[in-house]
Length: 290
Image 1 (cartoon, one colour):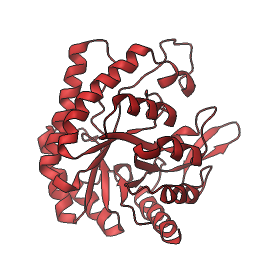
Image 2: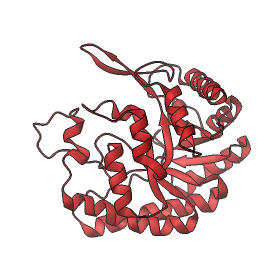
Image 3: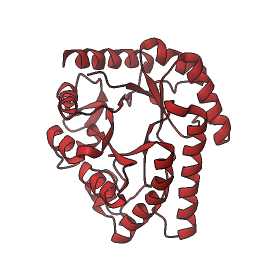
Image 4: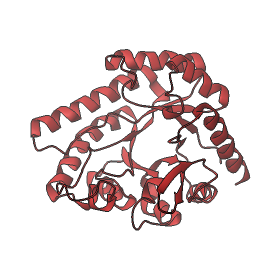
């Protein structure tokens, strides 16, 4: 198994510059980086300026792949003009990225807008009551309509988009993400299984069931892990620890013929640069084993 291994930018958001984080990612052995759609350090840049910095930094470091967790297209709004603007903004970003990055940009993460239960009495961490658990038929239609517009353009660019299974979004579960993708009906739009996000729900599919549900629309994968502490909840931990057997996950992906990028994340505090090397070593070792 030799899928591209992508470093999520959250390993290097502790003050590192873009040239520095690209250089480090390449030196550690990553094939690429999943960036966000804008800087989080307060520096204001246009989309062009932001992408220019990423492009020059990647070329200098020799990284092969650039993905984005953005634009966070929000189609969960009643105003049709606002939804049209969201679609146009997203298409513009993808065009700019493709113009600058070329073959380095072939797949990316995507979202359809946050979705919380309008009943304020529902707890914020009752994830099955938010996202697809509270979505109306109209909200489904808004997301489908918006992404059909985006898909018609990214198909021409040769770029694939993958809805991350993420709490508090319409595509929060693998089942919901698959339904959304099927309704959009474009080969350019698929699924990003972030399996750890599933274990926060009261019920969730097994790894085998999740991979089977995504099927031929599995375009991207996020790897991370968490551990449950009785009475205190769940906490992020290293890839080889916790509730999810990532070795089994990778083996299932291999058996399913998945050839897309695999991204590792660092949603835990501490020395994330060390975690990057630690998590990458684990993934490379497992890929070699299987």
